[in-house]
Image (tube, rainbow, N blue to C red; front, side):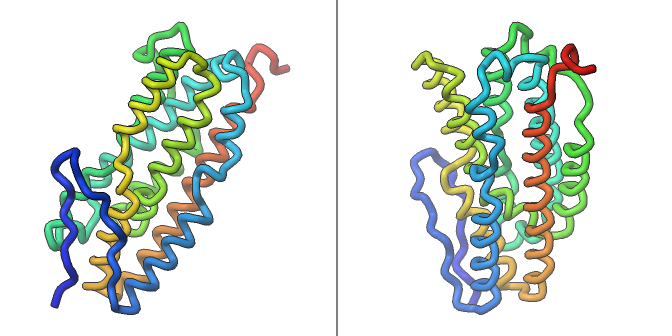
Length: 246
């Protein structure tokens, strides 16, 4: 008998799904390992977000730091959306609908750029930094191989978006701007994306136990790559402006 299916909600009035409890040992190991991994690499624990919060708005906008950071984020999210269509196994049991749950959060960064900079967001230009390019290559490599990397991102994406919101709040003391920011965050990634990703992956591994080791390996590689990306964004923010370098 196949495990019960979890369908993607089609309306805004939905019930938040709970993690699927499967009786087979393979899926239980997967869920335990993925929960531990996502907790160990929870983005909101990274010092990047404190750096953003503690910098003055002038410093954050100086030398277009936030503009460049926005470009890096957009480049990675574009890759996630593009290669998400290649993630295997989600087509089984009607779960291909979950392929559309990638982070739609670039608007948050564009909005902040518009508010902090005299330049319109459409003037943003430049090449991805080397670390950004490495993460894009990781997404390109791992997404077609299996569910591990995709699952990890779905489990932590809302955490990093909320972390960015909290880090940006000090830069927007006017309440109506904070309300605008919160509205963008609320509509970016569903609160239940974490369970959706883990449930889909658990179902696939329950049906194909041989996928377990490779799935966890992919997730660990994605976690390390994303952590390196946060490290690089923090380094970007702490770099002195070009005019002050010797």
